[in-house]
Image (cartoon, rainbow, N blue to C red; front, side, top):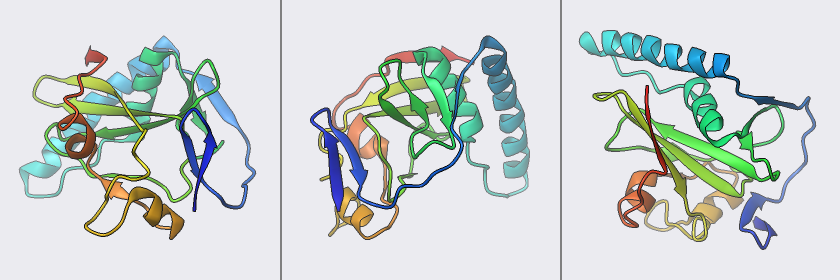
Length: 182
């Protein structure tokens, strides 16, 4: 069952708490520059793989998360919970991304908890990343297939999968809040 954590639209699943060591780090210019360098390494490798018919490699979170954090002054969160970052006000941030500009299939953990959803949309042709803040007011009720909603799949302990581009960006005519030249 989905649990509304507060009036500020923080969603989560009622479940067992887990304990692990917390790591939240500020993304420095050095980390940011390393993520940009790794983007070009990833692009080279994924294009080499595709050249002989192999499937492209997913865009790693180790590239997209620090880039998004750096441009928003978020703390990058590891081993804390389901969030990817934390804002200066303590809000839990979920960061999702696609390496394919025109489509995505984004999945969420069954126990995801966050108050903001940011989406990184890569354009490999121009080497740019567009950052979007996705409204989550109706995320819980969003259909993820013909019969189930996001919250229904989470309540079953499953990973809801949906296209952020098709469900939010295109129908709501969302514009990026930032475009980054890599």
